[in-house]
Length: 210
Image (cartoon, rainbow, N blue to C red):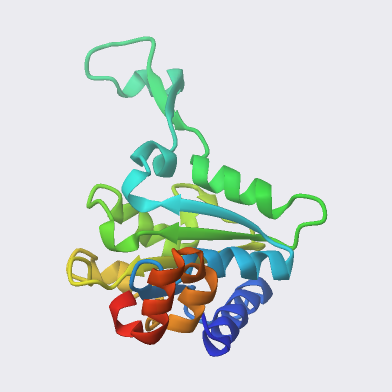
């Protein structure tokens, strides 16, 4: 990523940490292999922060909703239409993503945690409603994120991806930052590890690397 992109991301992260009203986090949109994930980890290291990377296609609804447990609710017996004397209610556990992010954010000698939502272009529609609250209100169910947790995301903008599979409520809760392919960044970090002849060819014909 170039310095301008890094500066935009860093400014947003610091703004979230300060509690500024900046309209949410940023979703980096670009081709696979441009360094979206590496950039986020590099920024986290520079800022002394932890990273919780969540791949949306792999996340389960239970990680976002929590797990139900039963508790006594005898006070509801009088409302029963069947005469039961052993009413039970449901109590939900803390959603795993909230618990992990908050724990990482409040670790000793940590400046916070970046909750990095990856592969957003492949969001499952069963999971999408949970993202409304997470991205818009910083909470899942009755549990909220610690102020030291910042929200960032990434998605591919290839022909197969795009925004067609993402609900407007999700797009409206993030700033979309299109990032073009940066050959020099790619070559310095990945291309130089290729066979000498291939690396030399790509150095002279960079369009083939895109």
